[in-house]
Length: 298
Length: 96
Image (cartoon, rainbow over all chains, first blue to last red; front, top):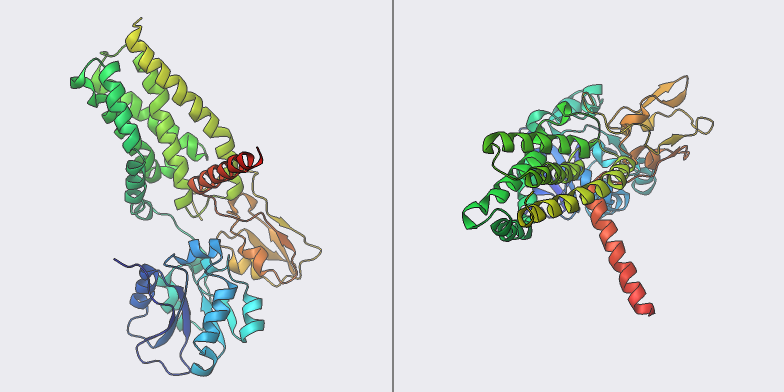
């Protein structure tokens, strides 16, 4: 399946030279959404080459940028196609596009229009005026929910070696193959705590730190796990689980920073610097406790 | 953006009000309403919600805004860091 649309100038309806031009990325989903929102209208759609990446991420990388905007306006001869010089761009493209440079190089006046394609019809109907609501980001429960499958699949993919190690160690530490699956189930729960529960419950988990939010979700899972299993493990195995499960969930929640629209580079840098060493110590100490507890039971 | 706040006192955003000409471009491009135009000058009203995307600095016509822009993504930054380590290791190998 291809997520790319060839860059260039497209028509929506039957546009005349006086009709507006809107700009988007050549990620198929971006293209489809803009087309859907403008269905029934006449407009030109200028699609930039962002290598199949959405507007926001491409603006961050600079592919949805000044150079590509200028290049695409020129290669499509937009100035000959339309008789106006207005170029509404998505607001989230502003991180890559300098409006004044596009204007000086192409003659087109960039208007940073709306964040969502959904607001484009209203923007166009109201004489290209951006209302405060069109400029405000949201991150609703539904918006977070649709991101979680990617988080879970990515976490599962990198989990394969961990699951193999857990099965092998579990066979030794938990005393035989019948109990070997238990650490894997505990791990899977921590994965769900970090990659599913933490993103969904984001605003309600304590502190502003994603690492702490994740550790909290992992801790709750560790408590649930022990409540379900009763007091059948050794003390060191129990202690180990309270170190390992929050560490896994914390790491995965920290990774979710990249999927949110409000985390800063400086903030993530600070979290990595403070939280990663703590996770590493918890991981080392937890694994040692768990394996040693089996060989040298208290 | 309501209901979401990231770490306080870390954003690298700086605005030089003496250079600012009050054109309002920063307020137009900011997806988090960090700026307000007051008395023909821009002012940072919510520094802590800045996500350092860099749109304001790029679009400021008089270069009155500075920000260490980038993407706030932990896995990206960890991968970057690992890649750098690898380069350093290879570099050291080449030297010896």
